[in-house]
Image (cartoon, rainbow, N blue to C red; front, side, top):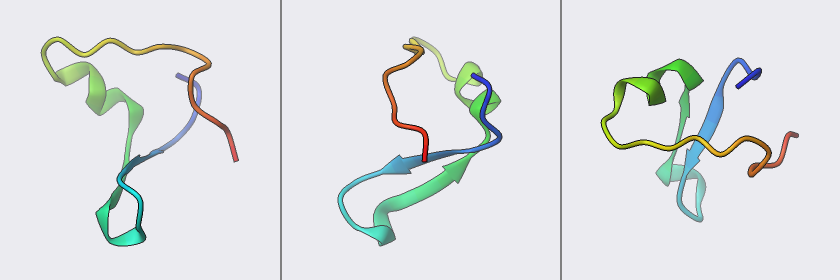
Length: 40
């Protein structure tokens, strides 16, 4: 992933977090699908 941070979470602002994409690689059984999200 080429972005500096990801926004993850639910429908409202209080359930979202900013995350460095490299942190996802630390989780077991995570599959990253390139091109699935929207860049804004």
